[in-house]
Each structure stands twice: as structure tokens, then as C-alpha cells.
Length: 117
Length: 130
Image (cartoon, rainbow over all chains, first blue to last red; front, side):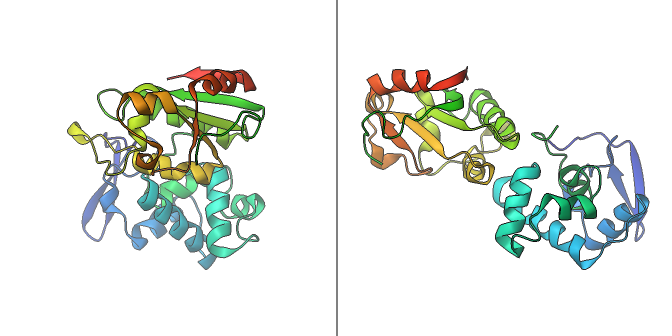
């Protein structure tokens, strides 16, 4: 679920964007590709076209199901959209180390996945 | 769809989640579905049984609830992505509400005669009731 408490803000194009304690957007409407770049840069990542494929799939998943996917459904959605190679956990782990569903959801402007421990 | 004979669909499974509540008015249905998804996300083989008022979750035309509650229909749609494919509905619970298997179109479900519902719970090594 989206958290409602702003713990810190990020200024982008003269606007203050609210982030919660774990760095997820307080208002999901604030998301933009430029913001994704910015959130990724904060973590020392640079978004490549392969990252954007995952972001696209994550945002589409959320639109369809009102839910941020856990790893398993994310791999399934990636496979359906971009083929088996792109759906491999290894591929996702390389792009978003630590936890692809959590890190990916953060950068894609989705709530933290609830069913992903 | 259709009432099946036991054995045909009553293969052993790991976790059966029983959903007995309608979409709104409480969070039972949503909690149950989320529990099923957590188990499925960890690779457990999960079955769902809709009984009691839970059968109402399967009717078309679901909407968001009051107070901004999300609808449960998109959660049902996500089940497939979590590989939750064994979904059952209690025929007696449908009948008691004047519904038939033609009304439960939101999800591919197997309609079970009441006696088979009992058999179903015995097929799973764990059962969670919501």
C-alpha cells in the first residue's frame, strides 16, 4: 500500500516530490521518466534500455492489477512481454540488485510490494 | 466448468485458502487473496475455495468500495500471474444465493458439489480459512 507520510522530498523541475521512509513515492501521480532517472541516480544506478523494459512491465502490471508484483509474477510478466531471456531472475537481479521487485517498484513509482518479503 | 467428479480435480495440494466473505464490508476477502499470493510467490501450490458469501467475489461488475477500498476483481485477475490456477466454488453456496455457475464468470472455477467440498479440504495439507 502507498504510504502517506512524507519523510523527505526531492526537488525536480522546481517541484517538491514527497518520498516515504523507504524512498517510495507518497503520491504515485508524481512519477515521470525523469523522476525515475533521478531515483535511480540516488542509488548510483544509471537506467539502460533494459531497465526501462522492466519499468514498463512493472507499471503495466500495476495498471492491470493495482498491485506491485513479487518476483515470481514479475518474471512471468517479463517473459510474456519480452521473452524468456528477459524473464530470468538472473537478468532481473543484475539490473536491480538486492530485490528486483522492491527496487524496481520504487524506481517505477509503484507502492512497495506487499507480498514480497 | 461444471460439477466434476472427485478425483478429476481433487489432486493433492499444499495450501487451500477458503474465502467466505464478500468483497466489501470487511477486509477478509482481500486478506485471504493476499495470503494465497504470498504462498504462491514462494512457490507453494495453492488452491482457492469460494464458499459462503465469498462466491459474490466472482460476480461480474465489481467496483471499488466506499472509503476508497480497491475492488477485488483486479486481485482475482492477478492470480493467474501468481500461478494460482486451482479455483473452486461451492455449488451449494451459489444455489443459496440464487446464483448458478453461469454467474461466476470472473475467474475460471470448478464448481463442486457440497460433498466434494469436504473432500477438497482433505486434499490439501494446510487449510487457511478467511
